[in-house]
Length: 280
Image 1 (spheres, helix red, strand yellow):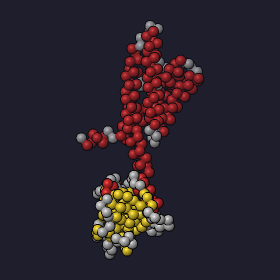
Image 2 (cartoon, rainbow, N blue to C red):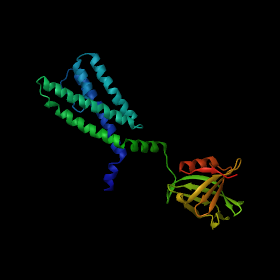
Image 3 (cartoon, rainbow, N blue to C red):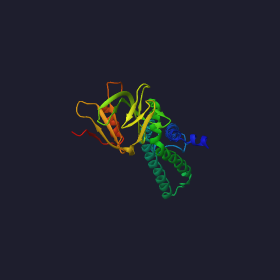
Image 4 (cartoon, helix red, strand yellow):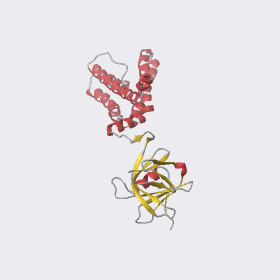
């Protein structure tokens, strides 16, 4: 069951749709060459309008030029859809219009007394390609995002608790009077639905409000427990997190690599918090 799931991943479905576009371009190009050479044979699974222009204007360079020009948007759709899924939508729209043109030609043949049923295979194969392109549109966004991450080598940090964003700071112990009595290098991790403050080192202790813990332990609290977040007055580099149960934690940012208060504040904003200045 798992193997089947992997074979139908968004990336593979999307690539199948892209190759359907390339398949159309290749067969249409063969049809153009065959028609220009005077052959009556052609492949039905192709862009019919392009082939029709060669037969409409036979034995001239103009017909071939127009037929080739019709293929240009499909060619762009194939190459550009690798990173931009909107081009899969473009290919789908173009081929739906081509299918409508096939139906129109069948109607014309019927009106002039010719049999249109020889084009049923064209319709059937057009329907199959449209299905492939519809699936490509459906999974396009997920597939192109995954390809972009793979190309850039993007790997989000994670541990047993899931994926997180991390900001390094100095975590300060605060007594009831609000004075900072101890500072130790620590980290703040933003998980999907909670924040973790963890101290680094073994010789010091860390406190959130009045609760002590060993520095190697993480003190975790969920977003729902946060009552308010403040930042310090001008020229200070402190964030204070007040919890709903009356506890609080200070993060004091020092001149550390990849650590600054603005970065931490942006993370808070990104996770939906309102960050307010300390009361005067």
